[in-house]
Image 1 (tube, helix red, strand yellow):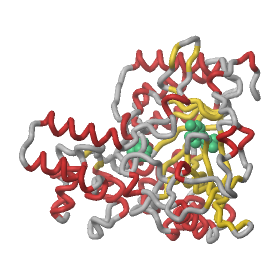
Image 2 (cartoon, protein in one colour):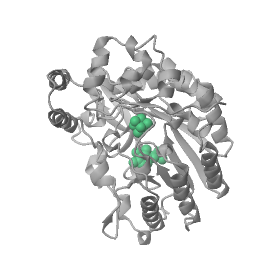
Image 3 (cartoon, helix red, strand yellow):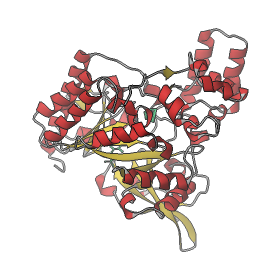
Image 4 (tube, protein in one colour):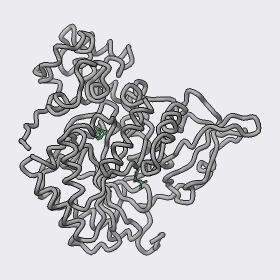
Length: 446
Ligand SMILES: *Cc1c(COP(=O)(O)O)cnc(C)c1O
Ligand code: SF4
């Protein structure tokens, strides 16, 4: 297969995309305006192979990548638009953009205060430890993506850094932390997208981990959207083979390598190149699991989900999570009522083979944990949401059903009220353990 040149497009060069001429003027202007506030990046593969330009602006992959007018509320849109129209100085536009960004809940779900660990009084900003078994690692070289999703909740952190010395220091901290936490079985590389890293840095991280004394570390996970946004990474890019060799080293060392692949729409699984990439990754012994939020205007359609899960099973992937779109960024535009998310899940789930029913959802990654909307029911004449934790800050919360008053408009856990006249949900009355505070000597749950 032929190599393919990665060309990124962003605010300063998107007008070079030939297909952009097909866009209605209103949408072209929206790129200028919204692109000042929220990150915008796409690339040659997404533009030429994934987007169906005859369907733009309704095309789901277009909606996934390009800023659209409704992503800002009208008054904010107007504020930036009028600054641009009267050629206001850059600083004035930036100042207004920052003001708007601050309103968009840049750090949802207590990620900063509750999850960032400390060892020996030192903060480790590259780690998050919320659930006992799994530590998230944000390598500083992986804090960007091959393209940006318009709904992304990681949008405040898109800055990159490419320094091997820094990487080595970073991985030393991770290893020290893992050695102090024998209860951790999984390390999840996340970002941004760790698969934007070069092979030298990624290989250095992995080799350091594999040669450290970490018998309790069983699973190495890599959260990535590269299969959807840049499958060439694993097929024709100069370092493609080197990446696959690193994957093989993980498997040969006796660790399970779990690629947590982010696919939002069945079209992302349709090209020849993504299928080749999947085949090559699977040949290393890695297992690919899949996850995606359910998002209005992009995949709020049970047919799309059923087709996506069926195709994934067909290609040897394991459907894993359906998430509810997070309460950040352009949430007002992408959010679906919880009841609608559940209907889409149920409708798709009930039409696929049991092999695809490994998927769980719809799930909110909320402050106390991952909360699944199990369904809507009526108990003693009261209409309620049945909910449960798939992951909880306190492991004892997991799979205990609990109930919220039915609310047809609610889009997130914090908009729900307990059912049956109760003041609080059960987890609000309990202590929230902080896994990173527990040390090796506490011998927690190992
Ligand atoms: C989702 C998530 C995990 C992983 O959860 P699994 O159910 O094991 O996939 C770990 N940490 C955080 C903070 C998460 O949001
Ligand atoms: S690939 Fe993931 S981290 Fe990157 S923009 Fe999309 S959702 Fe955000």
